[in-house]
Length: 279
Image (cartoon, rainbow, N blue to C red; front, side, top):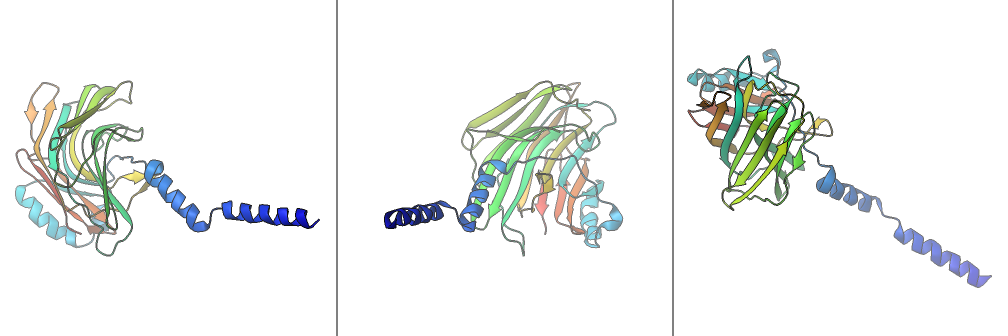
């Protein structure tokens, strides 16, 4: 009897040791989220009504309107968009220096942002061909991942390519038809290139060419937005279906709004798009 009781107690104690604590379970969830469940999905541009934006917009507009560019506001996009009313754009490309993201003032925990080029999503809301790089920060930890996406399907991460702050990266998309295309990312600092070919996708409009920093979504919700510092797309070019290369000068500028406050400042040149975090 004593032996049976002792064996039962040993088994119960062993089982108790095997049950993960709440801290263990939390750590496991965080690890799974970081490893697999942190699924980037870009979204079509979500405009913000001018009346809902706080007063600092006037100051931002005063600066950017000096270039005679139209400035509009969004909950998830910042950057430059070329738009036409009919199918026009076949390729979009740009090169930027990978920034070192920071948590925004007063923020803590994981924050992210993404820089990408794409076709459609501003006026053609049902499909986007795009590729880019996420910037993630969590305390002192910084990470990057490259991805490709043909919305409304979720993004997929590229493998076999890595980044660090200061790397020069070229991102490019090509629509070979309205339902097929290619996404390519090159880390010019390491010489590594990755690409993905799409077929049988939801039809593009080919009306928009874009150079964007985005507050992307995870599981349907916008992620906490990182202070990305500055992203400057150089050699920013779109090619039309007729083979003409055009730059972003004169494109519509988008600036991102959080809690009624403008947190980015965008501008363009003949072959440049600059997006700065202004908090």
